[in-house]
Amino acid sequence: MSGRPYAVPVPKGYRVGPWEVREPVASGAFATVYEAVRDASEGPDSTLDAGEQPRRAALKFLPTGTRTPRQLHHLRDLAEREVQLLRRLRSPRLIRMYDTLTVDDPDHPELDGATVLVLERAEGSLDAVLAREPAPESGPALLAQICEGLHQLHRAGWVHGDLKPANVLLMADGTARLADFNMAAELEGTHAYTPAFATPDYTPPELLWPEVDERGTRIRPSADVWAFGVLAHVVLTGAFPLPGGTSEARSDAAMRYTRGREELRLSPALSDAWRDILRDCLAPTHAERTTDTAALLRRVEEAAGASRSPRLPRLRPRRWRRPVLAAALAGAVVGTASLVYTTPWEPEPAAAAPPTCEKPVVYEDADGRGYQAGHSGTWDFTIARGDGGSQVRELQCLLRYLHG
Image (cartoon, rainbow, N blue to C red; front, side, top):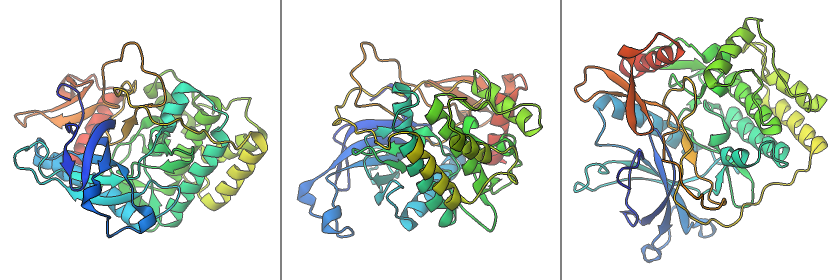
């Protein structure tokens, strides 16, 4: 695995507790996921019921010793968010966490001290399904399940903070689970605090250039509702609901939209029921946006039942191939801990593209005197050489949060 830009390179066969690492499944800026098999000689897990003993799982490694103290503090915050949520919430619409482990291996300082989440194993992501089949027949049924998961999160007092196709995982039977809760936050009254970055295409206009303090950015449940509206339009039509050929252009359109100088571009192929749902989810301000996810779920279920077959996609058995990570998103995208899942049910490509990170990543340079942003395994952009555009503004926003 040397030479690949994984956040945490782990050799095949490496042991963590009772688990043996197998193939890599996904990677992102701050975490890498591997398939793992439980050693039968270890005996059953006493914390799980007999019918819940997984033979296989997904191990999510968060990096450790090669980071600066500030970076490690930030990574611990991301890990704690996910662990807290998954320990406290149990739902068939949320990916399950079986255990948390800490690597104790001084002989391998790059792994020593790493946090490892033992997660329910998925077969792929909605992002991979959409790449293969835009506007899939199963889309409405999947949206109903995604909305159900979102409702369960909000009812429990949590905000996801980074809802998008890459963070919706599909199980072997085709059912959907929400995942990647690194940006999740527990509500404190009407709002919560979350790290000051997410995926711009799914970020509401009021958070594209937010105020950031020592706790992060204030976020409301309406931000998840906006993200669901964008996701639903992408799933149903294969296109974003705002114009623009790049993420940056669509973000600019979102800002014009909230000021009344741009309109939603909802597909004419949508039914009236779906159009009404999306208009409510994509209202230009948080105050106008629906936040009653129970009522929203009922409407989505009715629209899904009336528009298309509820048949869910059944994924063929996993056939491992060399993982190819999705290309870096175009436009101004700042680093998050989101993961890019491979599509193991597709045939081996003739020539695999070089692996890349999903988004640019911001780090201190080796001397601690500056900050760099990189993608595709290279450091090819620095704040000092920026042109003052939105990419620089977003990176500076992230730096203010990480480094004060």
